Length: 521
Image (cartoon, rainbow, N blue to C red; front, side, top):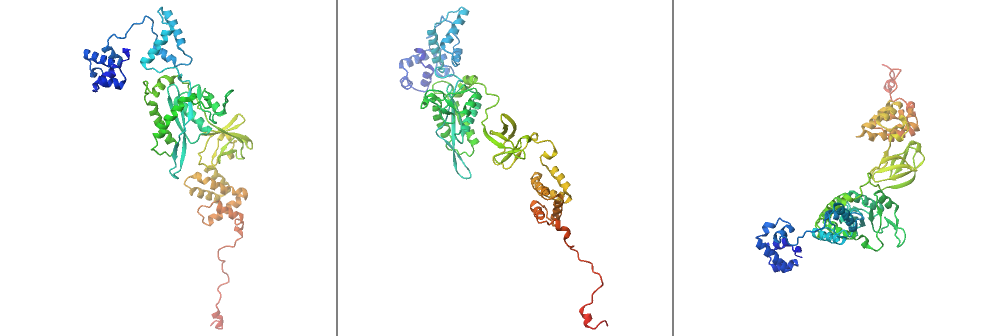
């Protein structure tokens, strides 16, 4: 067909100095078609400079006016709308042709038959370069897998290298891809990768197609029901999706992600091979930039890119995300609440209602929070301490009983206790507070001194504090006072003789020289 002649390309190559024979050999065109274009351009006085900004169809119309054009006697549907509808679930050309017949009958216009309708739609697809809808539907599924090749994180102190595994996902319709790094391939990392994937897509899909990995699929028999991991099934349900794993040893069931895994090896792993990364967030940012470039790369056989097709056609059809993202959590059962109203976890302590002291509770741990449960009832919720924290307490006022004695310790409460013991104790406590840069750092040392009154008595502690001050110890502490009380030095203070010299009575005493001389002279 003459309409297939790429007139614009021929004129461009001719302007670049190629002969008709060279154009035919390089582009696979017939010399007759090339000659027809060049003769028509010469006859019409058209050069490359005058048509460089025009489209192919416009140039062809200038060179061959009226050729190949014909008026159809049938009413023409909106083929762009037909193409968009074909991307939706369950829509077929048969259904669209039926709707077209109803519309033309209502308007009293002649309608084409089903065979002509299909052939005209195929011609529209070829002319416009639109993607075929035979394979996949937009927004209906995502294929996921772990990448075989891995990356590395470098420890800047020890120089050790830790492997980084890449989670890869692909939407088969638009070929839009997602990549996420993880330090392991455990279940928690697998689930977090899915949460990050749906957040990046801005929506979810009804179908997730994974491999038969143990973190997702427990059993996939040839016949019978597929048994999924409970956490994986719950995560999919949260996003209104179903997990439909590919068949065992059938990689073509998820061919899109298998192809994307090989592309990721080139775009991400090879593209970042000359860079060193020390933290996972730093690596994640670099991977995100590489994936943006990958998704923006133009298609080779049709116009547009993965990103343009995803943005224009697939994203509007995604299922909206739930208001709250899925949280990956672990449970710890049968933890006992201590006598201080706190339950221990990871060497730190979190409060529970005082009524539960001595009872057993369950802990639900997420990435950022710790929740205390008894049965199905949540009793308390706390932010987790950092991993490096040790022996720290988180206490909610609502978990404590009423009364001042149950309130958290502060400087005012410590000073009030010291005043009830005595003035020397007050001085000792004040010196402890003066010896630390932050007053909270002196609470525990001051309380250690005051709690000696429970082992001994307030009177003895006051006496020991007075002894420590008399010894001119600048900042007496528990280590100074406790030996005084254990050895009873505070009790022996009143029995010691006075350090002052006794007063002399009876005049002066004559020396030996007086008596040796035989008396007074």
